[in-house]
Amino acid sequence: MRASLTYAWRITDYIEVLKPGATFLLTFIGGCAAVLAAGGEIAAGRLALILLAIALGSAGCNGLTNYLDREVDARMVRTAHRALPSGRIAPPQKVLPLVLGLILAGLVLAWFLHPLCFVFGATGAVASSVWRKTVSCTFLGMVASCSPVLIGWLAVKPAFDLQILLLCLLVVVWVPLHVWSVMIANREDYLGAGLNYFPLSWSVRNVVKTLFGLALLLCVISVLLYFTGLHLLYLVVAGVFGLAMVVASGNLLFSTTAKSAWRLYKLSAYPYLGIVFLAVALDAWLF
Image (cartoon, rainbow, N blue to C red; front, side, top):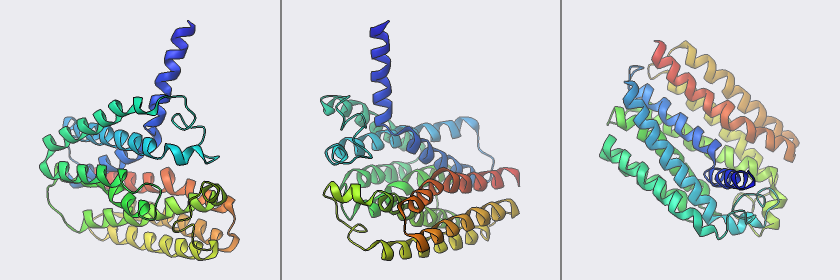
């Protein structure tokens, strides 16, 4: 019985390394992009294959970033408890066969879906694994975060148009809002770990001004997406949650507190990005 419990905990540690929350979000927005590309009419088998390809690749990339960040994570209070920096998986190299196998499996499925899916999947994998915890990581995160959306779209509609460009632009603007807000919320933790790259090298006041501007831009982009053929359902959802992001970033602008930054961070993930992409998919499916 004790051996079984130990084995279960070890499995849980490996699952934790794959960042299941982030993996789910990336898989979800990629699936929503596929539904939009199909105009709401997509075969269940095709959608399942798209979701599997994105889930495998995203889980593998998330696991790889956890492995590459393990030494920095060990120096931070917020992340020191994770499976790799805490030593619950030792040596840390034990996760590499799993994460590399998942990335490979995701890329194989992406190639089966369409060669362009493979190209953007591979691009996302590279972007998520280089220059970790540097000034470049946020901007490479934009590339990596657009990868699931592009895979979902191109697997159904292997062509670019204004809709997919605006979807990707929405993600590009969302990434720094999401990443920089958590960095502000845990600023002293980052600095204490020896990290002082942008935006940590800026004053908090200047960073929150930038975040407020990004929140306004995010709201504008989400509304512009409505004019590409979406309907009132999407516009209402995008408007309400876009306004919520503006209000949350505005509160941070005036307070500049870690608590306000954390609220913006929590709002930006599932409540904002998840629901806006859900509205995109429902709009395409219902109308």
